[in-house]
Amino acid sequence: MKNKRRGMAAGSVAAVIMLAAGCGLGDSSASKNANSVQPAGDSKAIGSGYGAEYGSAYGSGGSGADPSAGSGSGSAAGKTGPAGQLAVRDIPDVGSVVTDNAGATLYRFDKDTPKPPKSACEGDCAEVWPAVPAADASASEGIDASLLGEVVRADGSKQLTLAGWPVYRYAKDTQAGDAKGEGVGGTWHALAADGKKAIDQKGGAQKDSAQKGGEEQGDKTGKAGAELSLTANEKLGKILVDAKGRTLYRFDKDSAWPMKSACVGACLDTWKPAAPVDKAKASGIPAGLVGSLKRPDGTEQLTIDCWPVYLFTGDTEPGQTNGHNKQGLWFAVTAGGKKVPAGG
Image (spheres, rainbow, N blue to C red):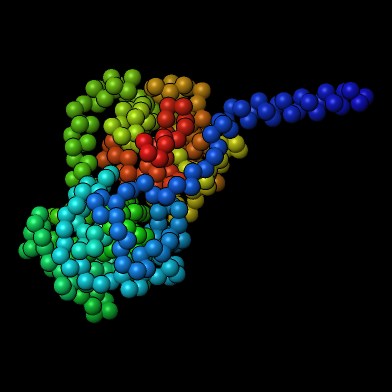
């Protein structure tokens, strides 16, 4: 009898091991690296108080449903000083952006309006995204001075505008050249010199390249019309993309065994679960690695080697990888379901 019980126990353990082996336990460690955006040029710290760690790992300003709002703590008070002479500088993965005289990246908010200029960021939102005062702002080479203006905020203060768009700083940018606010909530973007989104102008070349023909891209990734395929990224190497060429990401706080998504609530404002695909229409990846996960709300999410994968709202064009190494927790995915290293 004892021998029989031992045999049953050993069989149970073996079954668990076999199940676990199918869900990629070899890659379950979570990275704790900081945001990968590196300062361009001067890397000096920006004014006192910019070091406040504000907001969640999901890239939203706070825990509420609106990614523009904060929780009221970790205030960026004192970060509303004059912008001084504005400049244009290149920031990796973002493009040519407008900065203040201290090198802090300046932003615009999609919920604002430029004609007429109006700010929709008040209260807790303004704690995370301090409005830039209109006083003492001037343009340098590369910025048309006639595009500078001002808008009167609800509290009576005057905020700087660029091409009509109210201008902000981001409380989590700690060094000159940081652009951690790019893509937050899918509504905040670094400003280009003409008042448009810097990331869109950078993505233009990528878009033109992608539009040379879906068939041509299909040849490069192995199969035209694939719902899931590999594409060659200049910085990251071969990464997985969906049928529209959008980069897929995995989250270090998720788990592959058991399969579980930790991205819920406000996280979903920024990171959208990728829809399942037909294994037969996956190209460049073993069909056995393609699966799905049932989320708490009952919807199905694509998994690669048992890891849930997502789309980033900050990627506005096919081929962009703005979500890679975001908060040191989100990473593009290889053909084997592994995360692309932080450095690409």
